[in-house]
Image 1 (cartoon, one colour):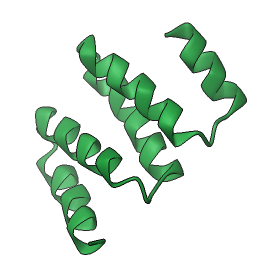
Image 2 (image 1 turned 90 degrees about the horizontal axis):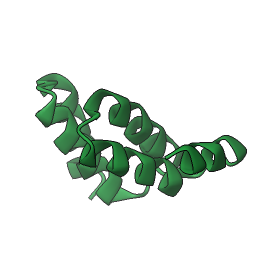
Image 3 (image 1 turned 180 degrees about the vertical axis):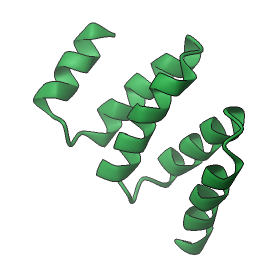
Image 4 (image 1 turned 90 degrees about the vertical axis):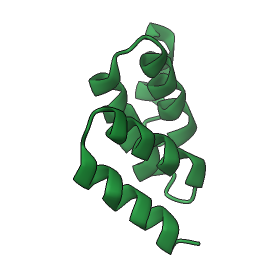
Length: 79
């Protein structure tokens, strides 16, 4: 994890790398921390639609209903 975070510090605009860190954090049940990385990933790669869905799923898991709905609506209107 430290190596990925160090790589992200060197390449802060790398949405795929931020998403990898987010996924790793989700797999270890560190959902709140993962949320920051998924937000960063979507911000840096707005055209990456699967990332938007991962973010929405995570928001649902955290019971952030309004935020999850906004992300889903953005996903649906981008189609």
